[in-house]
Length: 237
Image (cartoon, rainbow, N blue to C red; front, top):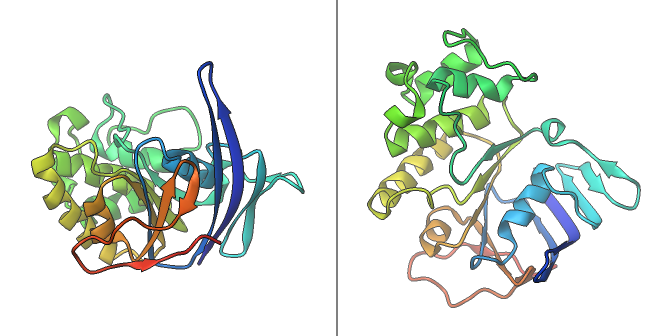
């Protein structure tokens, strides 16, 4: 499954105008979009997810056209079939772990039952070792448990790809290395493409099978190589 992206989006505010012009193709199992804050990474991820509509261009995944401005195609976010892990995890504070995971399958506005029984929910509770905390709320969880809950919610509907928005930035620095290792282990057993955005070089080193460098809204040449083993670089299209 590959992403084929060629989009343009202008975002305006009272003080500035930002142009996002992103063009790339990747079929790597793990792709990292890396760059400084304000480079346009989140806008790119939101466009892929269907949360932001580009002004022009197209987005294709696995041969399926998700967006094409020229023909008027714009598949809604829920129908694109992606799992999305938000930067701050976006767990519902008044719902327990089981409900938060089950919400990933909900098509309506009503919250799942506190004792919801569902085979997919049970699968991810077991897989991510959350059975013992299934009735707890997010405030009662450790950072790792919150991350696993959010990841389980993103995976419960069997997505075609997983989109990760700065998955470690909400963690204390001392937790990040352990959480990278834990997420790496979890992803080893998930046979779907993963696309992550980050500004942290450590994330690139851990997860960048292929890397795209984004600066000022455009794919650019990579910065100096980090010290660890290098991912395959994708050059601007």
